[in-house]
Length: 417
Image (tube, rainbow, N blue to C red; front, side, top):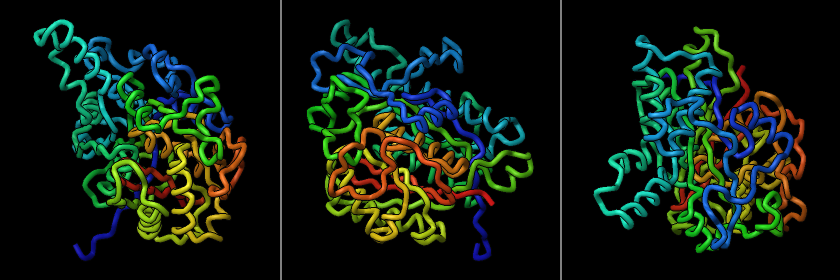
């Protein structure tokens, strides 16, 4: 093992189901145009809730991807994952067959899995008794089913797993998949994050924690990362999936390559259930570890897709973490933006869709904006690309994800050369 040389890993396929577009291409274009996907909640009657807005997926039909009978037995978060994975395979012109199936894996993270299934079946239990609870309750709601069902629907028989690290889950999934290919345990991996938690219980729970925006009359202006007038995050839903391949394997089949993944850092604050450690030391270490893994220095970084949730604690902490990890002078010269200003916060799905945007920024030398950034918080004083996207050479992009429990993850993507 002393002579083992890590494999190079490239991104060859992308899939996305989001509040602003139901393919990776539509998602990218909407993000570059600065469109908001936040509106009034339609999944349930939110009239009694303090927060009545969310980034819901619109115009999505699971039957475009999944047989009707099968779709009825799948929770929405799993439907999103299967659909985005099929998109990624099609985008990469990649076929899983008997010859390669055991070398193709799936890692898809989520925060809460099938919460809506649990809520609905609890109502059935209370109203009609235990005998009327669906026999599919448990297999529909458990978090690993997005990865499991994706494998079933695509035929991928290699490594299969599901990180459940709150808002870092999607990024952990991409990083873990990268490691497996890098170390020779798989030739290709479908990876990313999915979430469908715009439910009465989840919205009520986050609102009770004073985490959600209550700008109900101006939904498109409610998610405003780094802005002094932000009042909380906005929930979103959807999935983002990448197809990663070992470089030689991708080249052997003539694959198009969006970019290369070269670094993965993860840490824990070990501080508080929901609050980041003051000063962002844990997040800073994740960024530093990712750069060390990639063999880069701070000056190499062109763009950061920030976690940027639109909460006071996160935005200030992430700003401080970037200054610590990169050096204040370097941090001021790097372009940073938060796509959550448009999509809302997809929780466990956030890292997946933000990895998609990060890779496309590398491929296309353009970065999405932070919309609604009108009055910057004095403590958030870096270049967050306010209001409009920007043409910018992106040789290296970082994607940050930080989750409840103190989970911190940074991914590093670069141009393929």
